[in-house]
Length: 147
Length: 147
DNA sequence: GTCGGTGCAAACACTTTGCATACCT
DNA sequence: AGGTATGCAAAGTGTTTGCACCGAC
Image (cartoon, rainbow over all chains, first blue to last red; front, side):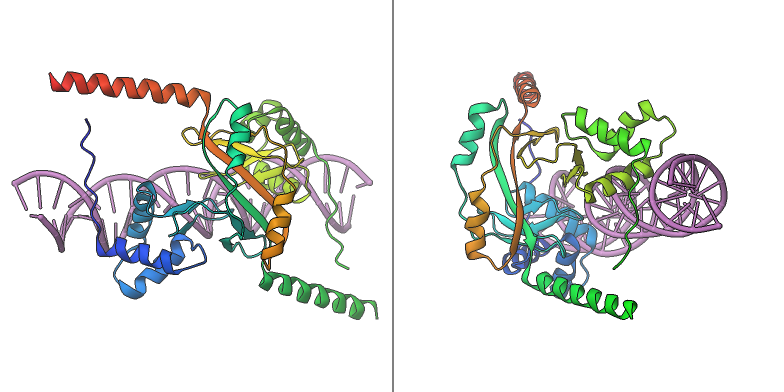
């Protein structure tokens, strides 16, 4: 049997996990880095990336592919997400996981299904406001141009 | 009103769309590039990226965030996907879109919900076989080591 | 002639890796 | 000592951008 490397819970890893538990907003690696640096000013970005990877492998945190960059969260319970199309923010969706979905697919697919992700997309409250503001400004400009 | 640039259907764009229509496997930008180059050997990767972006904006194709790189498809109809955890392959899932999901979230969220993505994950047939083979080999090695 | 599109190369953003040092047991 | 983690810098990947040229209207 391969003896896999022993896992050590270092201060860096503890703080990273802690940040992800507290932070509700599914931060990117860079955001985690900035947060962790408050407690550990000498931590390097490489350490953050390495540990986000290792902790994800270990199942202690979760990782999501974003459209730009990856996002992480400390909640390992299965749940769904809402993503803002304008600002990229990722939040938990108020909907319990629907277990039956996987069974529906198993019946008709040759894949061995092990899980699923459901992500809603739309506009967060702040970006809805921003869009309205932009729209108004656009209209004003048009009026001015037509004078 | 801003006069937005007029859209031209160039040969490059036609071929890109054509490739995506034919290709069932949700190729990456690089894969699209290699396919398109068969018809247009002088096309550049930058053109492929630019046009994948523009065609996505125009709603003629769709884009998905992968764990490594983005994937594209020519089918603009809403549908779900299955992703292989080992090889990253992305395929259509045999499950009709469930319209009620979005309404469930709208009731309890301040987001303006405009759509959703459902992605199943698991192992494709080929990678199931590969895992079994790897497992057997691992066992053999172990036996040999214990002699 | 104008405007949009292309190819090429350089720049970019995000992530991973190599290496010497430091830590823990 | 032996194995694991860290910080730093360099390298890697995938994607975007600047720019000169081209081609359709």
